[in-house]
Length: 312
Image (tube, rainbow, N blue to C red; front, side, top):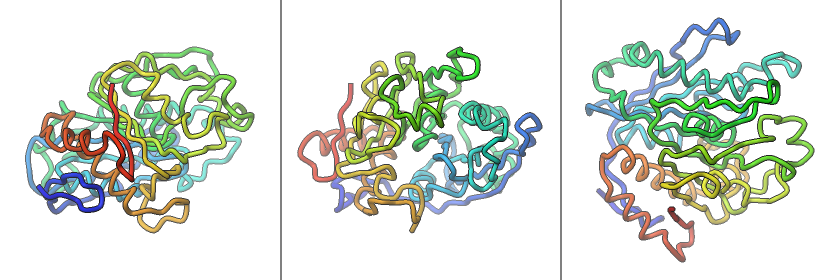
């Protein structure tokens, strides 16, 4: 265990990792096979799982600053390329477009259904994974995906029904820079182009969760400004924590990849903060160790230059 000089947080020792991609799962109803990437430590047993959903337009190769960090510290990280990925380039008039939010959830369920097959495809991983400890995580659009898996209700814009699409195999969630409630606070652009944001109900989320929000994340989707991305914390029920990243814009300093062009607030210190706090939460919520999480809560309780961590 070492102390990071930038953040003041403690970080466990890292281990070598292996990553395999693409692993292909047939998905006829989806119209495209599901491509999956798995990263895992080369040693260790009873390894918990992080099921990670990328943001709009990204793919299974994104978010290396987070997924590499988690894998190097004891987690099996599984990513997919969802239908909204630029890599697939689905036309704007494709009939699947209005239901991309739901296809994402189905992608995650398919991965959970085929865990043993995927595990066996990674050299040396079979028999080392704990299927009973799974955390859903995601950034932006992926944060909604992770939220749905733990109880977020989304009113289907085509049917008008808000179904419970949660999965009991998911024990907790991490939602990074993701959408808040809909209604009149959505901008006309969001109302027209992202109809699955019109009516979100966070009140059914009871699983433990960490929400990460940048206080400079002023998305063109809501009239409320950066506070909108804190809704998954404020509107869900107890046992939640909120990390507010000071000066953080939508990519929280650069979590979507190394040297990516979309980052507007590139800041290695912010990335380190998100890395360390999310890892501490993962280790805490999966029962590995609570010390790092307790340290983060203490260090970030007040007057830290990088961020603030609060819980309810």
